[in-house]
Image (tube, rainbow, N blue to C red; front, side, top):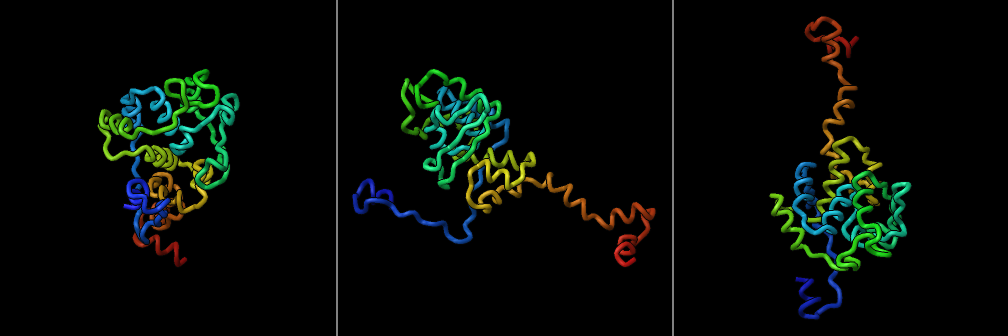
Length: 220
């Protein structure tokens, strides 16, 4: 309604940003690596395919991907930078480039002088969400926005054991609670920490599975 007041009715110049209601859970939608591969295979436009690959590889937001220029990209040292003016948190972001990221970027060398990604020889200035949704439909993936690529990247990191503080730096988040949204995806990697405080099971093993051996350990 507020957007219509701006764009259709000219009642106001800019729609105010409204905060989420207290207690409203943040939407976290992610897909598996197999589903991501199906999605990449279903994307027909070369530029959109490599933008998606780079998104899955780095977790960069859509605007940062589309506006990525050659000047802050260092393929030799495999890193890129997002300027504070282009970062949501207004802090510079250092972006390590893995093999997928490097290959996706290299395919665009020589296509445009300043912009990494180009369409018909021009920088990509607009986003066609319909093209993305059609790709998802061909891949059999439902309810998956492009921003969910970032959620997927973060979820994969947590599942392979990337510490949340490292993930926070990689993703350019300014608040720790933003990465805590993904903490529940790492139960397997918490198992070793849970095992560190085992008492009763270890006590049974040490005393030949005697009853109440765990209590004996606690009471001496």
